[in-house]
Image (cartoon, rainbow over the protein chains, first blue to last red):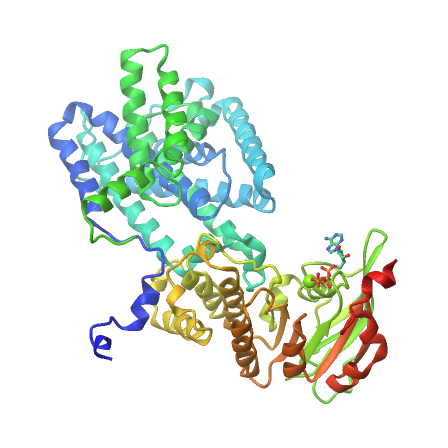
Length: 336
Length: 260
Ligand SMILES: Nc1ncnc2c1ncn2[C@@H]1O[C@H](COP(=O)(O)OP(=O)(O)OP(=O)(O)O)[C@@H](O)[C@H]1O
Ligand SMILES: [Mg+2]
C-alpha cells in the first residue's frame, strides 16, 4: 500500500469531476490583449468597445441558452430595453453613468420576468417562436412610441457625466473603452461565480433533464425564471453601455438582426463555456467590420459563409479548436 | 382514510384508476406501505407497474382514486412537492443528466436535498459537505472510479447504480424502484441486493422486479399485477403457492396464451 501515501486525498477526485471555470493563463491572455489594444490600436478603440459590448451581450445569452437550455431568439429586446432605459435615465433622471447601467439592467430584468413567465412553461420550437413573437411586438411598440424612443429617428441628445465624477468621456473613446473593459470584467467574474455555484449546476441539470430535476424536488420553472432574469439584466447592462458610449439608440438595438447576430457569435465561439462569448464576439465584430470595409455590398455573404464553415467543421465552437491546440502543446494539461 | 390510524401509512393508494383512451392501465389499485415496508410489485410485461409508479410520483394524473403520503393527500400535488414530502423513485430506463459527470449527477440530488440549489455563489466542488456526501454515495455503490466520467459514456449497468445513488441522496421515506436490477450482470445484482438490504430500516421500499431471486430475498410482501389490476397480494410464501399467480407469471409465463 505504498502508493497510498502519494495518492491525492480521495475527495479531490470527486471535486475534479465538476465543471469549473478556472482562471487560467488563457484568461490572463484575453485581458492582456484587451489592455494591449488600448495602447497599440488606439485608432480602433471604437470597434474594440463595440466588441466588448457584444461580449457582454453574448455572455448573457450563453447563460440562458448554454447553461439553462432556454432557446431565446429574441434576446435583443433586453439589450434594447437596457439601452432605452439608460438613455431615458440620462435624459430625465441623472447623467451619472454607473447608476445608468443599473437602471438599464433593472429595466431589462423586469421585462425578463414578464416574458419569462410566458416562455418558460414551454420548450423547444414553441419557445423559440414565443421569444420571437415577443421581440417582434416590442419592436413594434418601440417604433410607435416616438415620445419615449424617438421612433425610427432614435433616441439621442442625452449627456453622460464623467465616470465616478473623474473620467470624462473623450472624443477618441479612450475612457469608453476602459469603462467597457472594466464592466466586462465585472460581468465575467459574476458569470463565472454563477456557473460554478450550486445554482449553476442546477440549471445545467434542468437543461439536460427537466422532469428528473422536478423528481429531485426542484421547481424548475422558478429556477429558470431566475436564470432568465439574470440573463436579461446582463443583456440590459450591455445595451445600457452601448447607449452611453455611442450617445444614440436606434430601434435596431431591439431588432431581430441583433438577436440573430449575437446567437451567431455564440455558436461561432462555442455555447455553454463562457470563453466562447469572447472569441465568438471578437471574430464576428472584427470580420464583419473588415468585410464591410472591403465590400460594403456583400459583407453579409462573408458572415454567412463563416457561420456555415464554423458549424460544418467545429460544431462546438472555435474555443474547442483552441482547447485542442493547447492540449497538444502542453501534454500534461488536464481536461477542464 | 387515515384518521384513527396510530401512525399514518408511509404510502396509501386507494381505488386508483387510469385509462389511456380505451386502454385501462390501472383498475382499482389499492395497497398500503407501512414505514419500513419491503414490498415487491411483480407482473408480466405491460401489466401496468411502471404506470403505477408514474401515478404515485405525479408524472401521470389518475382518472380517479387517491394517494396519501405519510397521511398527506398528494393525489393532486405537484411532482416537486411529493419529493419534498419524502417520495423518491428510480427509472426503469435510466433518466439521468447525460452530458454531466457522474459526480455532478449525484451532486444535483445532494444540493436539492440540502436546499442549496438556489445559492448563486460558492463553487460546488469547494463545498466539503456536498463533496463528502457525493463521495459517500458513490462509495456505497462502488462507482467512485467513474466520478469524472460523463453519464453518457457509462455502461448501462453503471447508469442503474447512478440512478439509485440519486434516489438515495434524497433520503426518502418512500422509495419506488422500477426494475433496479434490469440489465445488471449477476454479480452486480447480488451487490444491489446487499445494498437494498442495508437501506435504512424506516424507509418504505417498493421494488418492481422481474428477477425473482431478488424479489424473494428482499421482499416481505408481494403484490401481483395483471392487465392493470391487482391479481393477488400476500406474503412471499402465499404468493409462491398461489396457483393463479403461477399461471400468469411465475414459472410458466403463460400470459400470451391467456391473451389469445
Ligand atoms: N403514455 C402511454 N400512452 C398509452 N399507453 C401507454 C402509455 N404508457 C404505457 N402504456 C401502456 O400501458 C400498459 C402498461 O404499461 P407499463 O409500462 O406500466 O407496464 P409494466 O408493467 O411496467 O411493463 P414492463 O414490465 O414491461 O416494464 C402497456 O400496455 C403500455 O403499452
Ligand atoms: Mg415497467
